[in-house]
Amino acid sequence: MKSNNKVYIVLLVILFVFFIVMFLLFGIDNIKKESYSSTIIVGNSSVFQYKKERWMNIRMKTSLDELSWNTFKVYQDKQELGDYELWYSDNRWYAFDHNRNAINTEDSIFAYDGNYDLKINYPEEQQVSNLEYVYQVLMDNNISTSEEFTSLYKINFDIDNDHIEEEFYIVSNAFTTGYTPEKIFSIAFMVKNNSIYPIYQDIRNNNYYDSCKPYYNVFLDVNNDNQYEFILSCGKYSNQEQIDILYQFVENQFKILISNQ
Image (cartoon, rainbow, N blue to C red; front, side, top):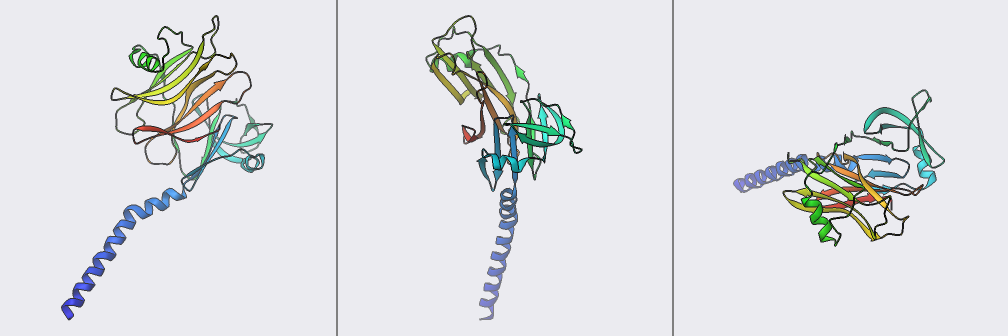
């Protein structure tokens, strides 16, 4: 009988140790992830908020006003400006130092405020010397390879932390001058291990004023997991609001986490 009790005690100790180890391995990490919160400002077009592993699109003026005079880490023209207080008025953000002196900023700022440091990266745009993948994507979408491009470049960046840089392409004929194409196209895609992964695609009949030219805005680790996400923005004609889309690469495909559309 005593030996049976000893066996039960040993089993209980083993189970207790097992649950403690599992909690230390996974429980603390999950609690930490759920505690992450951040607010991302993309120019004057988008405000994305991350709380309890969920994304929210902040649009209401009362919610935007609540963010005024909070301190954000501000970037402009792919360079870090520093920590500034932002104030929302007349549908735009204004930056001030801690003495409330105005800082000269443009519409293209990127800013974030959070309880953890977001890793920010602005990879350099490069010319495309080999058009093999570009032509393949065009042909797959029944677009002539003789089209003129108004935007054509790639970015090399290791998005998934496998120590191999992927290639991110942009190809578009939006905002043409001097001729009128029948179709307007804007396409973004990634090449990894010689395979093409679609990201963004907008192909439509040309109605002159509905074009949108995409670009890779910023690469950032939004959830502190050492793998990068990125914001793809798409600029439109005149004063129309640009499109901002936050993408994540997961299970060999791109997933939209949040968009301002």
